[in-house]
Amino acid sequence: MKFSRTIFLVLLCAFAVSCRAQSDLTRRSDVDQFIDAMVKQHDFSRAYLFKIFRQVKIHPEIIDTITRPAESKPWYAYRALFVTKDRISGGVAYWKANAAALAAAEKRYGVAPQYIVAILGVETRYGRNIGGYRVIDALSTLAFDYPPRGAFFRKELEQYLLMVREEGMGPFKLTGSYAGAMGAPQFIPSSFRSYAVDFDGDGKRNLWNDNRDIIGSVANYFQQHGWIDGGPVAMPALVHGSDYKTLLDLGLKPQTEAEQLPDYEVTPRHRLPPDMDVALVQLQNSAGPQEWVTFNNFYVITRYNRSPLYAMAVYQLSEAIRKAKENDGKAITALNDSPS
Image: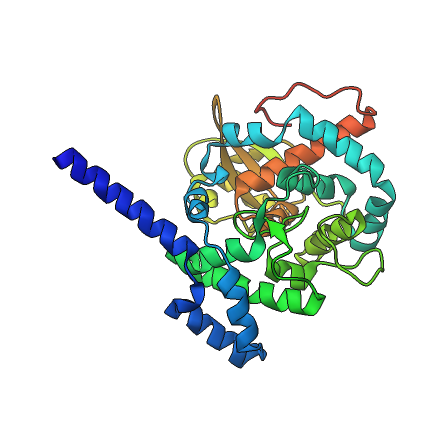
């Protein structure tokens, strides 16, 4: 009897979630409050927004996915997902196919091609996997049914509706990730509005299938966040004792001068200018922890995704792509979790 009651409760909960996913969102008070704010703050038509939200579909599986991000894995497992032979060879091919646009972006924004290519490789395998959710569905699911980050995603939903109005896009036509990230570079709506560029001059900002706009937009994003042309990204380091943990606690933004590293018993692989600002991160390799001194450009990559695992994957993939291209793609070195 107890077993049957448990099954009944599980089925009842599943039915409730399913009904909520299929119900008319305009009947919900939180959605109605959101619509009110959009009408008052941005002069949207209430009828227009009601028409949109009557067609929005909530996806309960998105909630499950966002609670299990890849960044929760240890570094050696995370790295194995992104620094792969397929992504390296794909990066070389993408670089060759888009060499002119990458060179133009480097000239205008000061971002070397391998970093732009690596971002696209990590994010969507060079545009091959941009996500299959309607952006408005994904954002609405997280905005109204994911309280831990509901405020953030309601802001992105607001930005999305402004974006499609400004760009003359249909709100249901755009697809993206489970978190509402869009196109080959996976820009969220606020990033699209702030950093996407019309790099080919055709009057549109197309991050779905226009490689020139995609490349220019990633480069602009980096430049606007303080990328230093030719600057270092990360360097392996040796640590002793326990004082180095103080640097780990300071976070990802470089704020310690290199000349202070000996005070914390940190020795970078190469000598650094004494006044260069650095930070320290620790990543878990299969054989144990590995420390890296990181620089401004590493921090800039974390503005794209705030995980140090993500930034290191982009950096190591970029180095692997650059080296493979220099070898004309003929030699891709063995992949492991050792420092590059």
